[in-house]
Image (cartoon, rainbow over all chains, first blue to last red; front, side, top):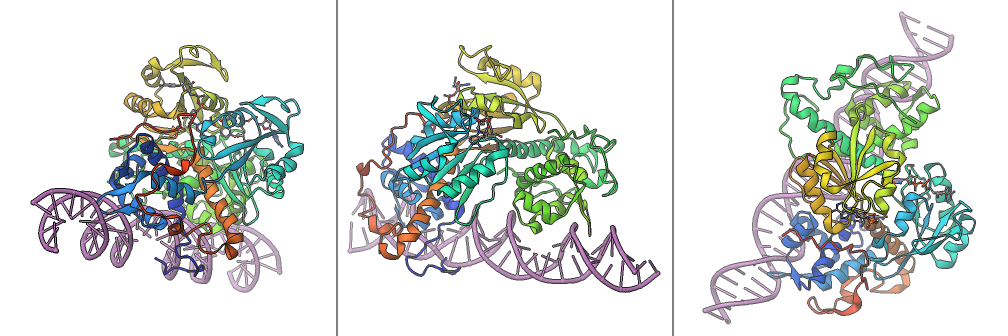
Length: 267
Length: 267
DNA sequence: CCATCTTTGTGCACGCGTTCACAAAGACAT
DNA sequence: ATGTCTTTGTGAACGCGTGCACAAAGATGG
Ligand SMILES: NC(=O)c1ccc[n+]([C@@H]2O[C@H](COP(=O)([O-])OP(=O)(O)OC[C@H]3O[C@@H](n4cnc5c(N)ncnc54)[C@H](O)[C@@H]3O)[C@@H](O)[C@H]2O)c1
Ligand SMILES: NC(=O)c1ccc[n+]([C@@H]2O[C@H](COP(=O)([O-])OP(=O)(O)OC[C@H]3O[C@@H](n4cnc5c(N)ncnc54)[C@H](O)[C@@H]3O)[C@@H](O)[C@H]2O)c1
């Protein structure tokens, strides 16, 4: 290590790999469970199993945080919980605003997993005047006119967007302008933000499409043995000529190698 | 994970990189928008901008599907929509069951993004007898006793888990035993499944923790100049002795009201 | 038919992330 | 103290993903 670009000569190992950061919450969850069962120590092997990862990976991940283990014994659960919590910034309280209190937003508002890790729902915001003042999950909804004020007063730096996709960018812009620097986006849109602002997206539709891809592959796999070369996939089979299929989508007549249904791309 | 079996030396270029697969839905969404505006063709540059990715990456991604572009012109929108849809398996209908119709499950049930891409909610399943028969988003909830029957009758291969974490593994096992081979898990637990079954997880809590990490780093960055040694980083500063801090600190001070904690420790 | 201009498709290099494998560190027993 | 046994921490190799940069392909205009 360290051979990379050591922009930060000061304190060493300033950079924890992104992949590691993404796994820390996983470890933390497993450790918390152990802690509640009063388990004093765990080996990398046990913890890795609980977190569903490779033990070598886990050890390397922890090595970025420091040497918190004891050889021959393992890791002290309580201590590790604390160290990871601190590293993730969970020892402090993070006020969060949720914008767009519809079906999803309401579910999120009532989600216990928020509070359980130091995330406090500071406010629920919606543009619908009819919603204003109405309590959702015990928290009164506030009107989006007050968005800037709310964010400033509470010092909110994390925002959750659960509005329709069409207005997500606008909402995002307002959040950022008001001082939010981390956004969790549930709307199916690509958000553009200035440097220094982090955006993470949760897109159900994309997840399903990825699953569908693998599902299709599995299905094709079984029959491929006797179906011949172009059973499940070879694009060339369907490729007539690139600039050909101009016009209607449904006009794709005989294309699918295995009796595909014409693609109807809906709204 | 996912691509466990590479027993396929047969047909060439069988493997589309996982990272590419994950981006295809993104491209598809952007292309669909263009299609609705009747835009006939797009360059890789334009499309990349719309999808929020690098244009070289996009071209390389498409190259895995075949040569569907025309040099000097770009890509035919309609044709590309069809090709990507086919590659992702969206030209066929995917019945999906949602298990656990609580706050989140209900929101998912009513989500338009499902149907818009060939995913059909085949059934809503919940263990609560009081829910049985009650329509949610126009679909009557069925009791989990009938889970196996429902899955078999509809030929469901994709399941969504939105139950409490504590029962997620059991639900998962039943789904898999009944024939489901793709699972989208919203419960904060690590699911273990046999080979051949794909699991994707959506974990709000993890996303927030990742944001918090970066948020903390941003905050620490500004003050780091004068903060001295243990600003927000050097672990040793807080390190008393590895096996020391037993029970102290109230660590995260959580008292999970949500039962967020797994409890399921895969032995 | 040829020249020019646009945009694709990809070879290549690089960096990140994963995994193996093992020396060293420490616990524990004798 | 010394030896044995367990488990960490990490060096090193490898594979995947990314982005640059450019030749080739094809459109377009003369
Ligand atoms: N429901 C789901 O399960 C689900 C899943 C994945 C993604 N999504 C996405 O999440 C978003 C919300 O979904 P939903 O089902 O809750 O929709 P919804 O229509 O029920 O809720 C949207 C809410 O946003 C509010 N809103 C509209 N414009 C606003 C603005 N400018 N400022 C503040 N609030 C505004 C509306 O008043 C409404 O209450 C959508 O983009 C959807 O695609 C939903
Ligand atoms: N609400 C959110 O925004 C949110 C966000 C992220 C993750 N989650 C997770 O999603 C899950 C559901 O959250 P929720 O807020 O909807 O909880 P909820 O308590 O409102 O709903 C859970 C539902 O699952 C049903 N259920 C319980 N055991 C079952 C079983 N064995 N088989 C079938 N159904 C069963 C219950 O009857 C209930 O209707 C939880 O694991 C939660 O941690 C929720």
